Length: 177
Image (cartoon, rainbow, N blue to C red; front, side, top):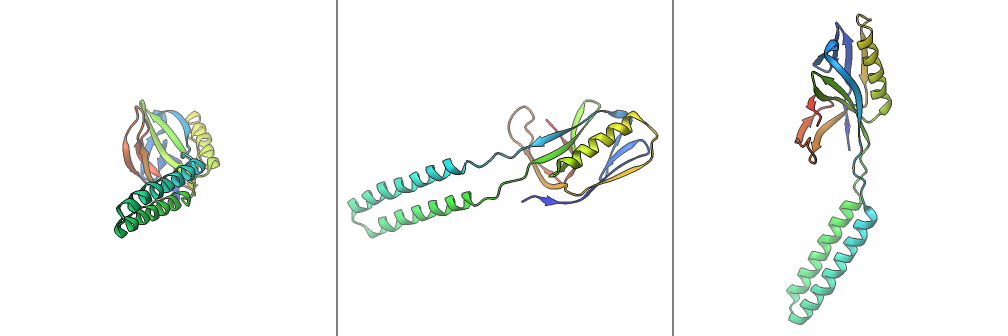
């Protein structure tokens, strides 16, 4: 479950402020958004494979236990099957994660994820207003509260932008790959 922590985004004195981080508007070369869609659970496949494995353990383990005629072997087979059932139930009951939308800012050739939100309209609004501020310097100060900012970790394990796991609190200097 994602945690929402409101993040204040300001445009004033020629800078974009996201939380405590400042990006001079004159140095921003691109503003956009990123969509992070969590991998959907393959419940049907996982359920069928899990049930097959449980039956396999019960069948082979039961045959081996009967061949050895030991009570301990039966207990081990039942314990392993029970553990597999428990793991399968835990996996099936996991909640789906929300789609996340990130505000991307390019400065001096470096791309940064500055804010992540569960609400697309918040990031769309920020992209529009930051673009306006870049094209019309000297405009009035603006303050936006991203109410659905997401705190958590950014995990990027695959591809050329592999950073492993980085702590992320809804805003900050997490480089995008």
